[in-house]
Amino acid sequence: MTRDGVSGRGVDPQQLWLSPTGPRRGRRPAFSREAITVAAVALADTEGLDAVTMRRVASQVGAGVMSLYSYAPDKETLLELMVDHVSGELPTTDALTGAWRVDLKAIAHLQRALMLRHPWLPGALSTRRTPGPNALAFLERALAALRPTGLDGAAKLEVFAQLTAFVAGHVGYEITQAAAAQSPERATAEARYLAAVAADGHHPELAEALTAPGRPLTPEATFTRFLNRLIDGLDAD
Image 1 (cartoon, rainbow, N blue to C red):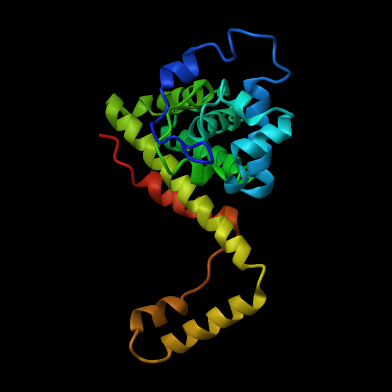
Image 2 (image 1 turned 90 degrees about the horizontal axis):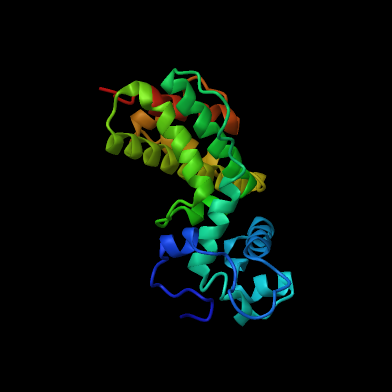
């Protein structure tokens, strides 16, 4: 195990999600797995994923580092708990319309909103995660939305994975662009550079693209445009 509590051995999903959530022996602790997870999420929300260490989380709940290992033996397990905890914010009981493209787009917008509330989430999803109970409930909803397509089970899972990857990648891009927008000087320099490149005669396609009429550039409008291209182009045979 590393200093930060990442073992690299992988998480046993059955032990994590289907086993009791607390120590079986000894006196009753002053904290719980839920409290540990909430503290870790709060740290990640305010300071980023790198700030989430077993030591920092232990200090947040007023516990010793070693006592946390009964609930989360390493940071990899803690990340699993964090991802499923915030997945509980996703609604799973609203009625579907029966129009699968409409429902998939609504699901993607819900995912985007969740990831913007928790900017560390796209990064946490970049490695393989085993869905916990909250994530499974949302997956069940997505599969139900895809039922009218007639796709087989494997294809439905692929579509949902593709959609989630798209949303995570786009939100990561949004966050980067928002940070860059804090520097007007950089934006001006980039515009000046592209204008110079377009005028050099060696990039006619780029020059033509830059003179095309603009489109709404708000984050919501851009996301919706890209999402429509993705879902409207999906083949449901």
